Length: 447
Image (tube, rainbow, N blue to C red; front, side, top):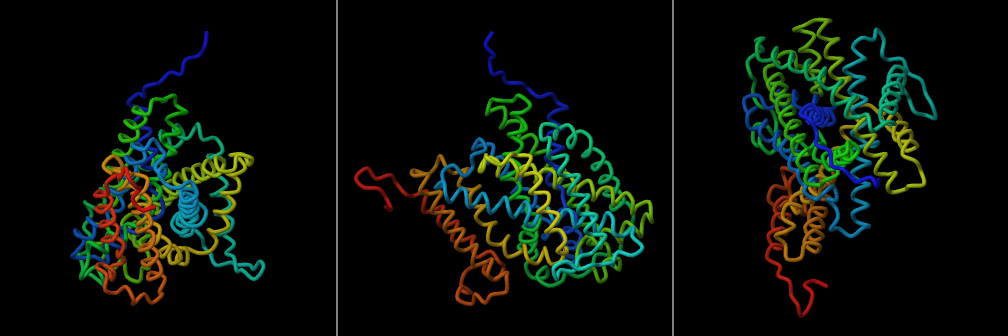
């Protein structure tokens, strides 16, 4: 009997598992270290800053996942093949071996392992580069573990969604309840940009989680996992992806709100902290002592590990499709080694290098999501996609150069330039203009 392609339906437990796995993929390093510091610096303006943060760190990733589902995983399908490939490679490198994955490994080391070391300063030198012994050993073990899990992607839903994530959620709920119940300090004064533009500052701070970029990747990864589970109908894939996205968004919002509140009411515990990880560690130490420190280490390590597994898997699958001669398993090994190498740079340096890159690439990702939802409204969708993304890229580069400390005085006249969002108005206008382009039968518009 010829085998028919059958379309399986997922049980409630499977759907929850998929949602938990999606949440776990997103909840990584940035999601734990940025909200407490933002909450502390925003102080009395915490609510506006938090709304801004939730826009770019929860709402946008959710909308992006839905856009990926709407486009059946082919969200860059209307771009010229070369441009789509270059943009995809850029996103996969940023979110994979260049920034997001190594950052997750570093945060796991800084918050999940380093506090237990008597001496974490032992170093040695290779080819003129100073390396920290404990950091090097930890990152090799950490990325080695992620590599082993990523080598068998068919088992991801079961291992991450149904085992690792529930443990992590249980620990996070405990932390959130303690933040609400145990009295913190009074909320302090807002600092810096949080005094004048708390909403915009919160929006830009949300960039740092890299979750909108991750959504472009995780959306495709989740569709792939659904196919492996036997869900072959694209409408069903969209339905389950949207359900998973809503579960993940609810979980992320819960974590961010409690961490913002923790930061805002941290008081003296936040003195001298240069990242939110320090505030979180100080808070847990203060309230729960060494047991709390062990539980926090477990949460952070699990959060970072699940994210890295998802990123390594997605990157290896992408580059394997691009270069099929090299096997998926070989790419998993290459990606894991690259992540372990970059992770020995140091957390503060990695964050400072990544900011200009994010300011450049984020506008293009956001514009891509916007035009995906409007594709049916454009008379000439292919041309419209290309125009809008080109405009977003040009102004994203301006914002990126400015974030890198290069003098961009020439564009000071532009609205929202000072806030680092010069791209917003021109991109919006380009979308409006494309909605008015009519198809001409006599001659093509814009040759």
